[in-house]
Length: 190
Image (cartoon, rainbow, N blue to C red; front, side):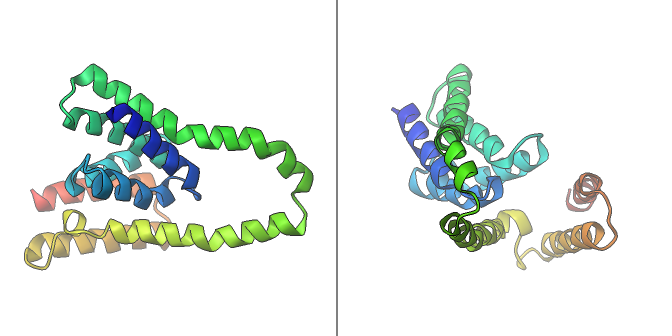
């Protein structure tokens, strides 16, 4: 039964997750952590960290890992958990595939009409809001610690600021910054 719920949940996320993987993070968190309790918030934070560091789209990587962990936490063995990964991933990409098949011809034909332009201009603020919600959801004690533990908290804030300044103003390669921040975090926090 968990496979059916996984399929329906990730199909719904794929259907309404406008804006790509980062915009889907809040939807995935709401379903996987809050609604179904398949993962804890700490496990979900690990999902996001691994999804961002592995190659490929964040939404698909998240669905794959969430599907695996949901089935594994339900008491199934590893081969069934891999099937859970495949189910969640397939369900996430299926709505996009179906929608693109259905509307691609019509969109190309009517792309420059006022109605289509109005729809896209209405979607832009929604996507920005979803990305903002994802950023706020990741500002948790698991990611930044708390002022109760000042050493971890200030190190987390300093790494965040250094990474932001390094990528935004010093134009350091983001992949290199991930490596630098990971190395600094390992040295300073453990």
